[in-house]
Amino acid sequence: MTSGRIIFLDGTSGSGRTSIARELLDILDDGFLFHLAVDGFNAMRTGRELRAERLDTALRRTGEGLHRSIAALARMGDDIVVDHVLSEPWRLPDCPTVLPPEDVLFVGVHGPPDEPTRREPARGDRPPGLAAHRYDLVHAHGDYDLVCDTGTASPRECARRIKEFLPHRPGPTAFTRLRRRRLAAGRTEREQARS
Image (tube, rainbow, N blue to C red; front, side, top):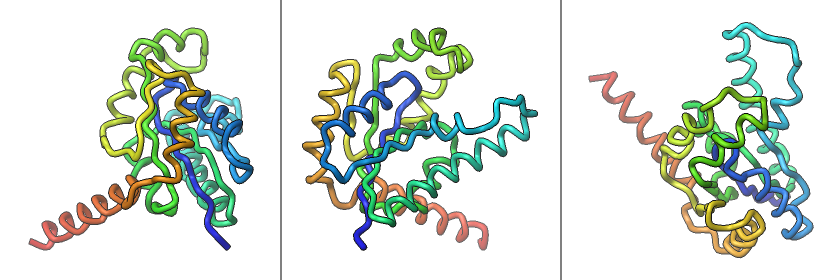
């Protein structure tokens, strides 16, 4: 069975990830049937208030579950559009270890810096300033296969650009490069620990 392709959109809240994902499902071939969003996974969690330490554990397990769900669907041959916010230090390193790096097109979604801050009050589900705080965290690794800017292009235009780029993914992919760097850093840490 052939592994499915994964278009992985990474950006802060309000950057336009979800709008691009919807456009992609509209314009891509019939293989792309699924949009897995971190917000959708989080929405499945109980509405009960959780203590901070319990919430942190639940959020981490939810994120790890999302990554493994993406991997499982891809292993079954499904093509998937992923909509994620890689704002926690463990999220990005986890992805290339469970997702097939060579099958992932990693897309950085940038938007006007003031747009997420403007949209937060209307959404009502995030603390003020969260998106601005996460911006540098999300893009700190600086390694994407493709970058889209919703400040200069509409979600539809970004989706078209991704569709055109998809058959010409670079080798090695960004996920492959990120995985290699992580493995090399781990070897260096082990060597230093032995010294």
